[in-house]
Structure formats: structure tokens, C-alpha cells
Length: 130
Image 1 (tube, rainbow, N blue to C red):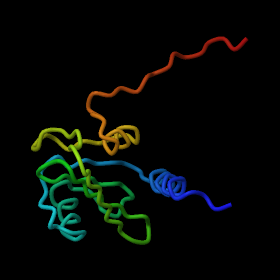
Image 2 (tube, rainbow, N blue to C red):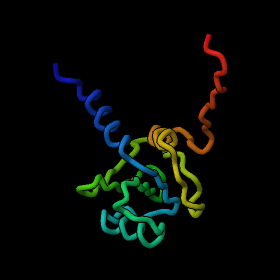
Image 3 (tube, one colour):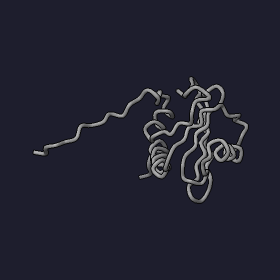
């Protein structure tokens, strides 16, 4: 049986996300008329990063309801675009330092959760197994 469209989308997202090395959120407001080449210039000049590194680079618009992501999968560049129909993403103030996000923080960001206030629960070390 063929998987549902929603299940297929989740699978594709998991495959993409599993190969990402680091995730960088550029906190400055970006003119969203910029396409892939313009964003690559920001990655190289402003972030001093290698756009072909396998890292994911996230950019925001002025109103905070749109994100663009740049990713290189080893063969080609991807330009991903995410737009909220209602509300805004929970983003740091423009002008703050560049954020390196964990995979959890990225998922929270895309889900509309304030990733800056979330904490991953650390589990105590198990000492006895019987």
C-alpha cells in the first residue's frame, strides 16, 4: 500500500533533517526578494561559513512570518520556503548574534514554539540495571 501524503511528507522531512550537520539561524532581517544566490552571499560574507558544508542556514523576513532555508545535499543546493498563514515564528530580536540550533530547536522553531525558552530534559545516569 502507498503511504498517505502526510506520512510521505514526514518521511521526506526526516530524511532531509537526518543529514544536516549544523543549523544556523541568521537573526538579521533579510529582504525576501533575495533568492538562492543572494542568500549564499550572506552565508559567505556575513556568516563566514561554507554554503556547501551540509549545514542548514535559516533566514527570516521583517514581519517574522516567513523563513527561507539554504541547504546543500552534496549534489545541489536547496532553497526551502516556509510561510505561516497566521501568526509569527518565535524568533530572537533582529541584530542579536547568530544562533546555532539543535535539531530539536529547529523543530520547535518550525512548529511555532519558542525554541529560546525550551529545554531538553536531561536524564539521570542509570547506575543499577537489576
